[in-house]
Image 1 (tube, rainbow, N blue to C red):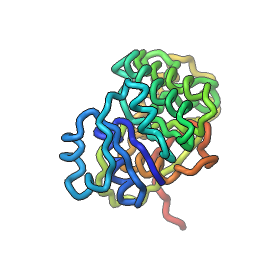
Image 2 (image 1 turned 135 degrees about the vertical axis):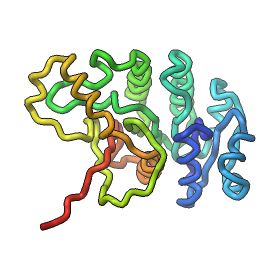
Image 3 (image 1 turned 30 degrees about the horizontal axis):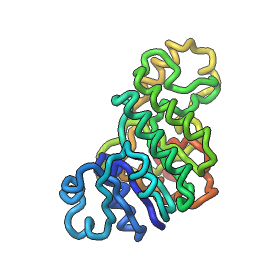
Length: 242
């Protein structure tokens, strides 16, 4: 497949790019600094990537870059940029809608705060104590929901470097809800108590950048199981059979 990555030199984007090359996809990197890309990917890998060095806020440049692409991965910007982050995502999404030669499959990076907390009718981003900047992720999600695109939002917790682990674990995936077990008694907690409970469990949501990239690249077909969904993921220990 032909996949374009916006923000291809960021922590997530560079891994999506490298993993896509290894999987045999035709990868395009939309970047501001091509020299940084070459340093990160290495000469051999970089030769297998089409590089577009343009302004991500220029509608015409993004529109042209999307032509004949099957998938767009939006890994550009971060919530700390505020309105600029919303503008970056908004421009890419708008050009995905406008470009008739774009297939329509979009993955966007979000965060675990976008996911529903089971039994409560709330998301993490609605609770006291969660950074106000996370509301920019909500606005980007709202923008996607207004489109007819085949979109998914990746909602990991804290992303970390992959490391070898001898314990038998596997990835657990969820759609729209946090990938953690919650008893139904949690609905009796106040919002402050619920926020405290979530903060105490944030480490359970740690996941590697590589696993996040692999999940997105494994689900790039149109009309797949994650169409129009927020996707959560977490590690679960495999208990030995007795």
